[in-house]
Image (cartoon, rainbow, N blue to C red; front, top):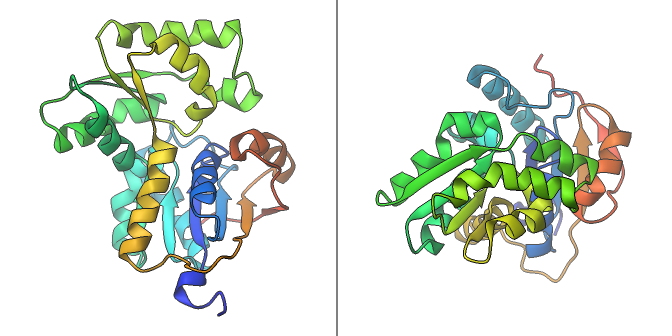
Length: 273
């Protein structure tokens, strides 16, 4: 079969930068036969400080570009873009579109025993209240506490994922949540899985961490099974990486997010015409 046949078309994944590579990494590990085209909109990162209208416009441009690569499913691997643009993309595209918020929210609801759930994320995502709304829509009996952790992103991108400094930063951010007696903590940013160890150390053994990237990969599998999009053959998928700015820097930083060296990173123009 050729790639033009539905199951052999690639999965499209986009994010404002490198963070979405943690989602891409989980999808690649879970579905090794699938090919992936990843787009990092690095020319316009971060999305978190932009208005909802601007994020929707950027997200639509990224989606439109990935559609030209004949993708069979789109993953919005950006919490901000998921919060503001997911429904618009679903209305405008004829392929399945998944975000990273609902999978994490559903996992949190399924694992909590006390109903006291913590969420950490960027200021934009936390201020949008999207996780609280989603979690309480699924389980109205839950009590959700959220904290923005803006310094986690630059620490992750600099590779400062261990040590006393990041431990102190995590302690400063998470103390408020720990005092709320949460038993579940959602990592509501795609950068945060890189900081799992210091976050877990501060949160303690009684708090279950929910990795939205991991849960999104599971949601991708479920959707592709339902839509009959899975490749059933024993083949090895390929991974293609596109960026709207700075391929060299993306290649260097992206290694720690994807877990291995990236194949050639290509520059593309995603600015709407």
